[in-house]
Length: 116
View (cartoon, one colour):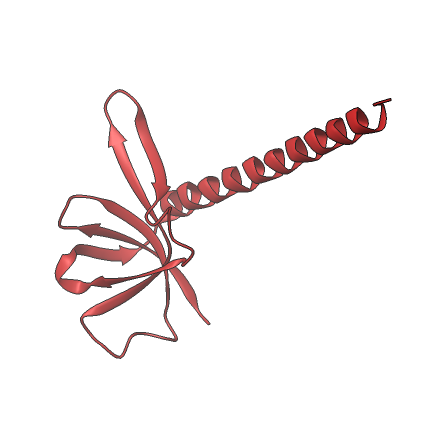
């Protein structure tokens, strides 16, 4: 599997950062399979922010019709930094959540063991 990060601009104006498996292109030439896609937005007040393209799905892939694509090119260094920073932050948050759950479980066990 040869994954490459791409920047894709779609008709809605959204910018997508996603990996594409260069060894396993879709048989349908009108479909691009995006792996772990992110959407980036720029707000004058808030600056650049990034979010998952499919936050409510268990699947990490999306099939995008090429008719929706305005531009598609290999990601530059900046796109790699944005993408990696986003997923690094998710990992940190999950680790923090795990630590909080462990602390909460320990508190519950302690409370239960001290009951008379």
